[in-house]
Length: 233
Length: 131
Image: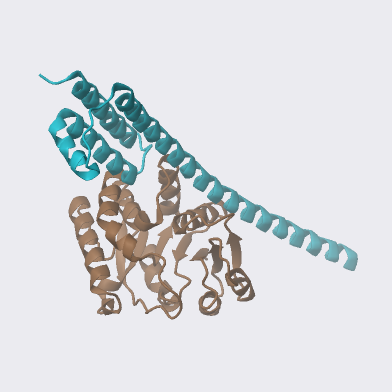
């Protein structure tokens, strides 16, 4: 039986993390659920533990990129076959995890990416956000000759081969900042011969709090970030 | 023919740009830092290479000044020092983040293994006692 680790990076998500963990554990009792707390100041850690997840607390607020890379290390050290990432804010539906794992189980891909643009669900977001995502996805697709529609999607799954390759790749590089993590990883994965496949997912609107990945400043800096990622990768 | 002041300014500008590209090629600088220092290098080259552009500053500050050798030399070295510090801080930040993830992952895995060992020990102990 394949061993699957579900990672849920969380920062100040006390209102939703418990529900996400409970749903995941109920749906997939054999999967291991790991919450990576990025210096939360609220009850996130307690709620995650109460819901039955293992919790890693980062020593200080390090950002989502460190949280994700910590999960890669744990998955490699504990010999997991597959790693899945969903958000703690409840926007990703744990019911869709099998969709992500299917191409990995069937050895069709090394990395599966959930795309909100393969369904008609993208209307949840503002036009500016959608335009940015579509522009960057198209640009990377053209440069790397890939078929990517949602390059910033954080609902992903990796197989063991992908995890090990990515760990090595990140070790050789400078630390990658949150805003461009997925774009950078997609480019590097394709350069390193990892197979990517997108699967349609539904992204729900946030029930509580504000998005940490988008702010007016971050949106203004986005074109610069895009150039930065293309230069670094 | 360019003034000596302009030549020195252009030389510093080229030095910053070369260092910037070198660090990018070695993956020792973030793309953001690269773009920032590339712009600084180009601006430095432009303003020192084409001194009439300094009229912008005359207009902004409402005063006329001539570049004084100590001030201009200090400015150029100060710029290089900031460039070096920027690079060092960015490298230390990168190492710190990598250390944070490595420590967190190892701590968790080691706790997990200890817990597993204790569980096995407890099972063996209870089995022995039952015997």
